[in-house]
Amino acid sequence: MGQHAGLKRSFAAMSSIEGSTYEATSKRVINLLAQLARLGAKNVQDIQVPSIVVCGDQSAGKSSLIQRIVGVDLPRSEGTCTRCPMEVRLISGAPSRSSSSVDADAPWSCKVMIRREYSDETSQPLERTREDVFGPVLEDKTEVEMAVKRAQKAILNPSQPTSYFVNCDASVIRDSGANELKFTKNLIVLEITGASVNLTLIDLPGIIRTTEREEDSRFVDLILDLTKLYIGQKGAVIVAAITCKQDIDTQGVHDLARQADPQGERTIGVLTKADAIEEGCHGPWLDIMQGRRFPLKLGYYMVRNPNKVEVDKGVTFQEAVQTEQDFFEGSSALAELRADRRLRTEHLGITSLTNALSTKLRKMTIDQVPFMLRTVDARLREVGRALAELPDAVPAGSRSEHLRRLIHSLEQAIRDVVAPRGRTSKSLVHDVDAECDKFVRTVMRTRPRFQLGGEEGDSFVSYGEEDRLDVLAGQQPDAGAVVASCAGGAQAHTQEGDDDPSSRPERLSIADVERIVSEERAGELPSFTPYEALLSVIYRFQGKWALPVEVCLERVADKVQDRLMALVGQHTARFDRLLRRISPLVAGVVDARKAESGK
Image 1 (cartoon, helix red, strand yellow):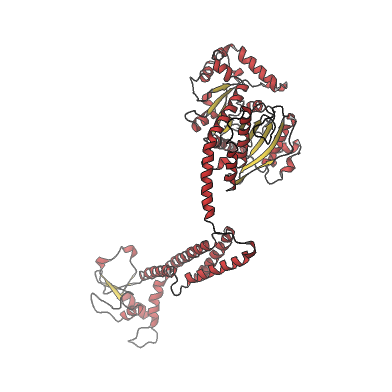
Image 2: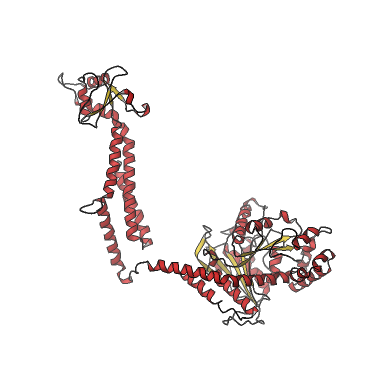
């Protein structure tokens, strides 16, 4: 309930947004999204948290794109930058208690954090999201790259205290083989204040199809699944980085975006490396920018990132923006785009893209707040009703006595079920009796059939169910004394009424019985049948009883255990830990009694 209450307070803070300046409103949007992230709102059912998700194939220029938006250098070397997603919050102005004021001249600073949303063992969402600050607040942009590398090292080694990695040296970072995890769904978070724009975005690892090392091949599916998870959320705007050096149809991000957003309603295409388009090959890209191919409701943007030579020379972010502007203004191949005033002013260059993302995120969040608030209110009411149904808490001072009474009540309930007296329920006894009756019927079906006479068509009798002996043909021989002793009676059959031959009990003829009597005769008088002959017949068929005995014992034990477990659940439902302690004890007792009975 605390999570839902926290969400409601966050939404309530946006209720007075009308009348605020654009800058103040944008900042409050970023603060709201940050609070929702800390509360794990995206994992709450039916809540669509607005987000900007940047994804793209490896080497599509996505990393350069993110760096230019953020305004700082970020890790790009293999082994660190593809192991986890990263969230970046850009806030224009320093944080202030007054949500309607923004200090536009606030100094730049960056806070690095680690947000754990998922279990590293199961990859399932945690019950409570945790966001922890990693290291001191940075005031020098050149320190960000190393701080992010250290944070990534910490998030890949969750059993180690994060403080160990705050100041670890480069050798520890490079030793990727020592990492406990090779990949994680948990996030590194950068919260940058004093930025030029208000924006929050998620940077996903680049999509890969193959790996150089065989042991890294599993990252292909891990990154693919992570990308699908983020862009599949209905509140996510998909920013698909598409390189102009490769046909759009061959790029994985294009297919993934179309699968997640078939109508193209929440996808923004960003065409990178515009300066790498070969001469005479601009036509398809111009068609895409102007919506003639693969149209998107939010459109496409084209950027020109610094190339390797410029990066090696240490080009600044401001110089990169100017170089990009000069490129778009001077390229004759892109004159068709410049002729379209809307494309020229709103869809060319990193500045146009950043402003568009900020505006889109602001509008989405403001539009979505009422729906999120109603959803949280409904969930709060559900939780409130559930809480109201819970019994009163047990006072700390009387817990031992309460436990003693609970155990005594459970013991008495078990006694009443196992050995009922008076008006207590006898359902378990009846269930056990029913299983015993099945056992008796099964054993009775193994009794012998005695054939009267020597011909195939003669009648035969089976004994054990009736109190009389009906013989359909002939006179009972003397050996029938053995038969009559097997049970109190018999049931007559004719061969035409037999069951399937495979299920028929074994037959004994008069000759068989006489032979058994003869073999067992010792010192009895001539007219007496030896008792050992009776035992011999019984032993002959008793071997078939083992399986019915096991089945009966197993079924009785299951019924007893099910009934006892139900009682344990009824008496300890409030106390989950007690339930987990008692349940295996009860199961153990039943198993022990079953083992003793089976000996």
